[in-house]
Image (cartoon, rainbow, N blue to C red):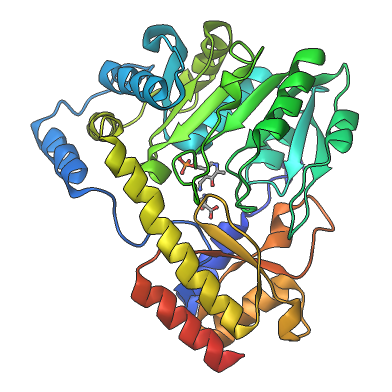
Length: 381
Ligand code: PMP
Ligand code: GLN
């Protein structure tokens, strides 16, 4: 019989969410807020849906959304992007990643990837025939070893894929680390695929530095954002890509043959969202910082070894101090079934042999849900 490609795994988010539903567990596994984003934006989307048109919007995205992306990037980062040539709207950051890898990576191209890896990176790179060159960060420090990173680059390197702020490490890369990455990209003539979907979710005064703003990177970096994260509409699947025309053109070609476009009413609402004042953005991080502290303090009290979180809405915790004698995968299964609380095993974010005693919790949940999860864990442990 004709063999079928079996290289695509089932994502850990699907595995854990399915198990959570089956057992009526509190789902702190898959990352999504349990309260929807701004009501004014939902009304705007609803009104636009009713008023129409509900036909294919332009392939590159609604002009008003593309202009809004360029405006907000100028406002926060001083980036000077020409929305007509340098911004593309996609159906979520996931589609953006797929388009970019389809467009850029040819069989035999090497791609530098930093573990822990967001779920789709490795499958997409491999499916494109790319050769992953893995550089590992390990908890609790998640320290970037610049010498190891340098060793992963070669004259076959096509690109590095960088997630900053980083899921699940909750690490925000420092300017020095970013400068080292940029220097390697320039030296090895590599592109940088920058997954910056958590750009507006950072804590304790940390800023966000798009790699694109560093010397030599304006023409090499491809920047990805998502309304799922910035407006707490993960179900909308509205993403955007910024890149120099020579890069954006082939990416837009891939987009033509993937989704071609994204629902117009959602694009319209996201355009209005991006124009919100600075207070909106500050409040997003501020509210999440309080939730991070709430969950982290509760986990500490229960004996988890909580790993510091500088950005994203995830916190990882060392389960070894609990002495429950199971690896992270088994522990997450048991926690769901026995305690009624779901987390994600951190080893799932490694190609193989990852750290085996850390689990990731999503804290973008109502306070009473976080408290109930902590109660359940307390009873269980
Ligand atoms: N990249 C990272 C690091 C993410 O955490 C996520 C979403 N959870 C995505 C990409 C995908 O974003 P979207 O839902 O917009 O496709
Ligand atoms: N990004 C989310 C997470 O890290 C999940 C997204 C998804 O399920 N595809 O949990």
